[in-house]
Image (cartoon, rainbow, N blue to C red):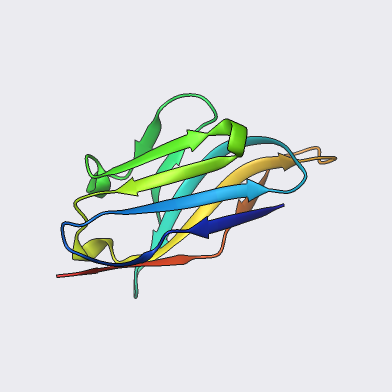
Length: 120
């Protein structure tokens, strides 16, 4: 099982980016999928999380600007990032709580980080 993250880059303040995270491999079922971020010198924080069914939850600092959506058929989540601010600059990490084929429990899986840089 692996999570492939993509979509980071450099953007000016007020701009937009879309991050994509696709889970692949021997997956039985996926529970939550989420994006975390770690800014330089700061602790990792949960940005947004979405269950298999239902709406997403967001950290207060991104509400109204970032939208997390999910395509269960593709095991993929999309983080649409609008009105970006310099304080959104961080390495973003995709996360999934999933049960692999043959496993008896859910485990955390992480994608590689993707850097988002917002210039002022």
